[in-house]
Image (cartoon, rainbow, N blue to C red; front, side):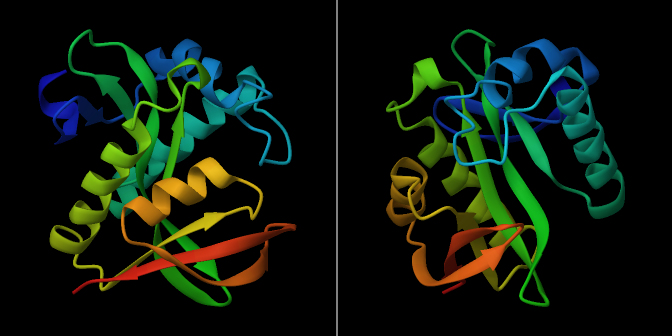
Length: 170
């Protein structure tokens, strides 16, 4: 892994994706239950496109979603990262996360997202971060709130209502 590790937390490593991650990522974003709040779960080709999109982001923006790996076992358990999004005509860095369903409730998303918020503020120079979360997605909303983001308003984005969660750099 070495150089591809971008962030390290107490229990997690966040590293650049590779195409070798396709099968493991498919268990996360291909899971219909885990992707309830998306238009649809991702099929195999969609998972490949997801990874390729992030490889492109690393090259052009210097960041994106990263593979989330347990330090204790090296096991791939999800993704988290900093993604440039356009919401209501303004570009912002979104903190996004997905964790494999059998590991929900362990605080991994909160821990990874907190590291990504710090990265956005301290390494990317962001003055503000956002998370776009569907109103019914209580678990993801809780992750955002635990990390100090607040729902500023509901916006119609990518075909659905989303809570615009935001946090300004102090």
